[in-house]
Amino acid sequence: MLDSKETMRSIDRNDMLSSLEQMPKHFSEGLRRGRMAGPSKFTPRNIFVCGVGGSAIGGDLLCEWLSTQSEIPCSVLRSYSVPPHLGKESLVIVASYSGNTEETLCMLDEVRKKRAKVVAVTSGGQLAKMSETYDLPLARLPIGMMPRASLGFMLGAMLGIVERTGAASVDKQFEEATRVIGSIVASCGPGKATAENPAKRLSHELFGYVPVVIGYGLSRPVAKRWANQINENSKSMAFSSEIPELNHNEIVGWMRDSRSKGFSSVFLDNEQGNKALSKRVDATKKMVSRVAPMHCVKSVGLSPLAQMMSLVLVGDYVSIYLGLLRKEDPSSNEPIDELKAVLSKK
Image (spheres, one colour):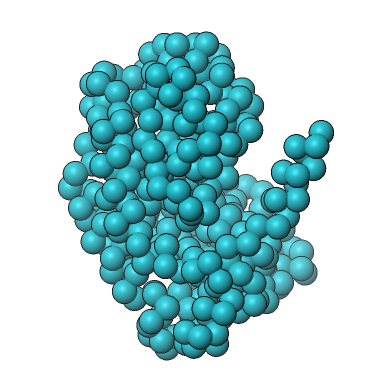
């Protein structure tokens, strides 16, 4: 099925797969737009990304990457309010692809009152209008995409904004990450047959199971991306977890609950240079594999940014292929639309 272009096209009616093929271009263009919108050079005390859903995951990746490059703390806010320590020395990236995300707009109101340095990232909507009204810097993205498919633009813009402040330099890592993304597109894209395509093979192996995607170090936020993408693109249950936390609670459920056999673990392996953590990962794999199917996906590249993005791309492909196997259009979002309609009435 996954080797028939006609079959895949008939299910993927909005051509979600093409957004992955364009990821290298999206990433580079996002960086350019972020660099143009970012504030003048200054050293922020802290960095915050305000957003939810597909617009916020870029912030998770940004914060994990930044932790390897800078001493400036970075965190993602997914709420209606912001913490007291956000202030005028903070850099705040307000991210909403649609520009109409209720929670994000509420956070922007609070951020403005705290006189923080704000940059908006959006394709339009109320966020773009508010940016113009309040004269806030704006990295405007192209319209017409699903928010979860805009990650290249979103993360690229966030990296450009942070770089503009002088908090971190992205040039060499960005070049490698873009090359690696291109290599993943070539090896995992729809034109590559299942026998030679690791993403197609993994989607077949996960079909019928509930995936639990396990990250550690650089791959912690990527595991969340995998689970979210499987939830939305394949319309199926999936969860994320991380080591070492998993070893102090979740491992008991894996080993003692007979329902574990209905789950399938996916470990996102990356170079992290910590021997104690490596030992934990290996031991966890051996234990989990005794009770449920276990899979490993290894990162590609030398730099932290390249490794993270290689894992992101493989996961995005797996989530779409799983959706196609389930005969689900990866772009549809009916339950989310239903919830928004109910909330708008209230």
